[in-house]
Image (cartoon, rainbow, N blue to C red; front, top):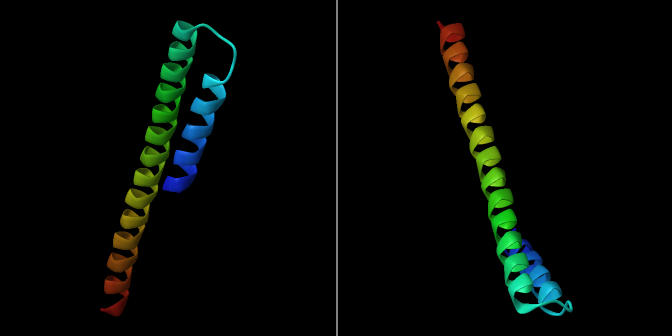
Length: 71
């Protein structure tokens, strides 16, 4: 996954650098793309965190129910 994100970032930067535009506009585009990539990655990590928390809660509930059923 890390290689994929790196490849996407490099591709975006190279695409912007080779586009005919003023230097200031190119730098702004790179900065915008960097912020967008950072936001997407943050959302991805937040989603994974939520999934792990839900799985942990489900496992705790299952363990409690199993323990109660064993009595």
